Length: 293
Image (tube, rainbow, N blue to C red; front, side, top):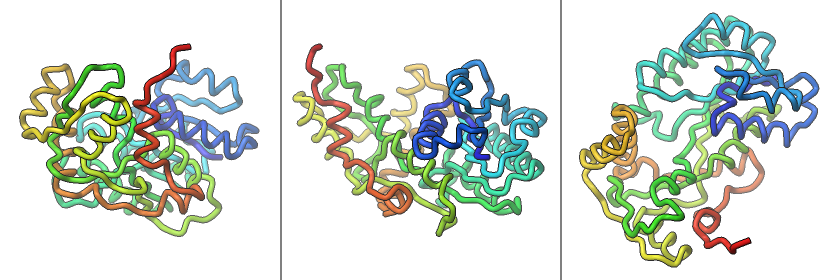
């Protein structure tokens, strides 16, 4: 049985959908999900997915949630670093005690960095906990979500400046849906050749170039402006983001500016069988004018 945690989240739900699409036979009792609120996964239950209540902050719930699972797709949680580290350690311990034979963990591209950034610290700690657990595991390090471009430049807004503290650094972007597709492929693979897969786009681009491409597609001016990290974090907090999350995003874009997200790999194609969509394709999907119906 394959069990996916966090299946009510944006990434987890897409992983489940791709598992079903790739292996419909899993619905015959071989696919389960662990969620904090089972009522929100009722649609999955109606399709034949075993829906179990499990909360990474409540270790006693995980013994029941993980029972009988051979492969666990452990989707990282959200929250401040101390909370996430504790939650992830709880899940790894529960998986070991439940007899899970293989854990596939959704990590982050900068997890092996020496910098003590919010996101890197969490994922680095979890990867170390997996190494110490004695459970066979595979780490999938995701690049930045392409979908988040629409949070930075909303398709329906009259915005002419993209402000980020990313300097002149380049980044490769992949959509959540395609990352989920690759993770599902890894979960179903009879054999994985590597312990760590880093999922990136086909090529990296600087945000000045990304802004120019968005401008061409939507037919409206857009330029990139590099801003100080502290100003960016303060602006996010002023717009209602929790301080820890604003700081984590500021740290992340600072690392982009340092070149830590510029690398590209062929790992996506190795898992899925073809490369992810190009940046131009993604931008067209997000920003091309829609014909009125």
